[in-house]
Image (cartoon, rainbow, N blue to C red; front, side):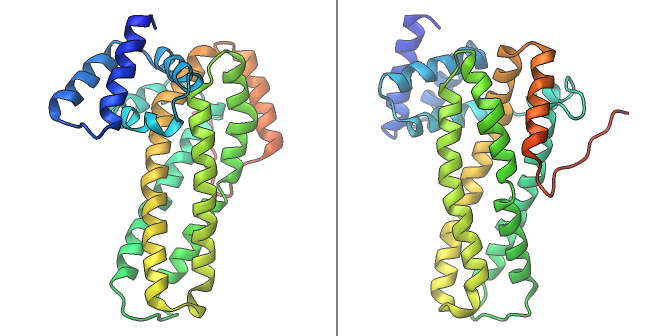
Length: 254
């Protein structure tokens, strides 16, 4: 990305982060992003972070980019063989999104309750979902120990730094959800509901956004900057050593 585009990107980010979100600005951002491929955008984000921009200040930009990229995930998946590192990560994302849907519905039902009733299925569902979200750690470990380092060796740092930061934020939230699910019987139910509502909503919003950015920005960037099939095979071997989630789907060639 040339300096003129970098300067324009910086100006757009400043306006977004200042809370200026009129339709005209969103169209301007969309027009700008339409002329930038994922790799160029990733490199530009890296430069901005190196210049002192906080990674979280990129989130408004990512939200606009997300709106533009709906539908492109299926096209990327169609190019991947079952068992490819990225194919497995995307399939795991689909499972995690299902858990988030369950968490959202379960929290909504619990918020309508006036008192704790241990026999209600919502509390068993909450424990199940919380345990499986924490159980996604192997997914994040494969990204952080295998995929991200190889992307960074190719000179791309911005997206991986942002994703790692969000992983840390999400880890803390997910462990909090597990503790709430385990200790609801001993807590004041009003306090439990309040903490659950805040924690569940933070996880659902952040993790959905995180998954969309990985599926539509980070993973396409990885496929572009790592073109060698032999390297993906080496990475697959490393991923196999780390292991997979209890919910990782098994995909076979047709």
